[in-house]
Length: 220
Image 1: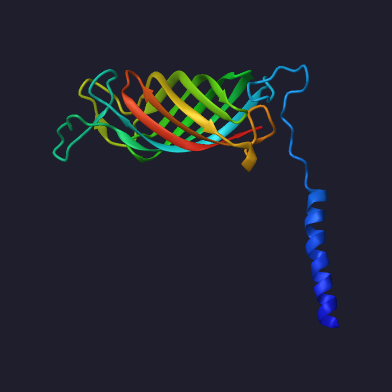
Image 2 (image 1 turned 45 degrees about the horizontal axis):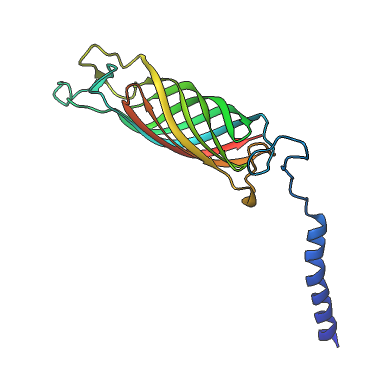
């Protein structure tokens, strides 16, 4: 009799718990455009303002054979190392804002980069972005701006009068993508706060560097 009562109680609890969870679960935010409101191709809201911050990691290598007079390292005997290419691992922080405009978006962001290994000490700059929205949570974009680089991480001199203590500035440009499917909780560009994964590749000067980066963007 005790076993039967226990089985009945267990069955009742098994039925009640999902029902209680369903009753207390907060409804998912509806980011659909309202009747008469401008909409993106996927039916989400067409316009908004989205501030964001993010952190990324990656690597960069500079070509020192043309363009800017970047510093070059010394060999053990004190002679200049020919064809030297400064490189290193990086951690980057970004802050910016996106403005969705129907199926496209524009925006601007600033960044600060710290070299954690190799010859790159600091980088900082700003860039504008423009691209296409992939639904309400994805972005494909191109960017262009200006970036300064400092190479204080090694004792060096330049074959053309460079100085490792100065910042080297040049135009920067690149392409990238952000993804954040709403069905796993990464909210859309015109929705509530959430996260997206960003991957991008940039170059510096006259295609003098290659900088692939990967990280997380949080928007609010």
